[in-house]
Picture 1: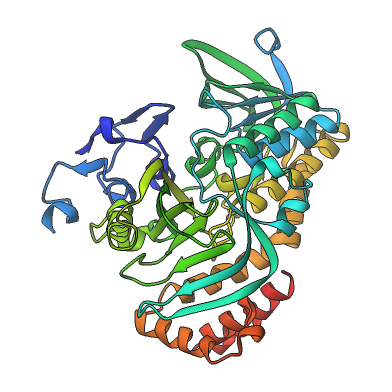
Picture 2: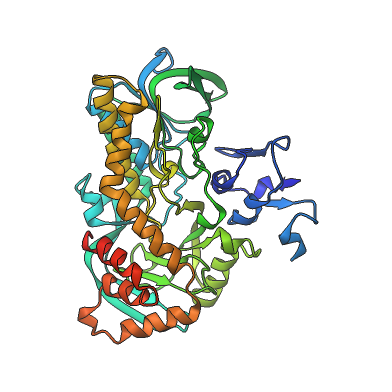
Length: 66
Length: 395
């Protein structure tokens, strides 16, 4: 599952732009992921410039494995 | 006023340069325009390196000194082995203060008659009979629904408006540049110089920039390709390492985070009742990452088309398609050339970059130009030379 460190987020929307299923919502100072739609592709985890997003399932995350 | 009005000719989602330019030109053309910005301030937070060319800016406005933090007339490239190559720019550039610039663009739109609303978050569009007819959202905690003949997605890198309508605006991982910048002070920089650091160690699949805002202040930022970000080292880490090495005593005034889509322009920029402009339509120059001027250009072209369409015929796709055609005629071909050049540069190793720096170093200083540089850069792939000459012939 994608986890968000919301207190770290700058709300830039970079993750929204790459999300293939449009399941991330970024407001002026709020971010949320719709886990029912999310396919755990982790692309948002990769692009985040400041490492706000992470994959909690270590089998799926290359970052966690690295 | 906007609260009572149920329907507009155009509703623009997003108050950056592309959205504000659309709003101004559409309002000047006699259309009723509502511009909705999700943040509380136009122009804030800045998500940009703030560099722009004088010639590009002049297409739209006489540069106002209030917008300009510094004027740039020289460029310095630093190769992986720290070989430095410098040359004069044939046309000067500026580092803007986007907070002031964006504010003014929105004011121009407002003076032309557009209504601008901040803190207005759009979270869906209204579709009836396969036609986009309005938007839904929240303004300071209150739900709203507004109808429009044309909804304009100027919602930047997120580009959700287009996606809600079924257009393919998702950016591929390799085409998303992950950007991180600090505006720092307490450093010594040449206030008239663009500096670019090119190396996989500084910025894989992108570049690191030092854009001066005076003698002791600069935007120092990095953009790395999502393709390399996958390896687990974030843009922030790359920049912080660079700053610790090069400017350990810098004080940080502002931190900027953002994604830069360096993709081909979306194939379909319009549909019934919908137009996409700026980053939302992927108009950013794929080589430079510059998005201000192309965004404004797309806003202008889209608005001119919208004015014609609504005065004569209506918002059907066939009437809005002139914008798509015009974009591809004026900027689109170059955009695709830049994209091909980007795809090649992207694969350069640090050895390639060192070789290119040596090549340009061998050219007499007064004979160096971006055209020469890129010509040397693509020697390995001569088929690109034509693209390089064509794009620089136009600059």
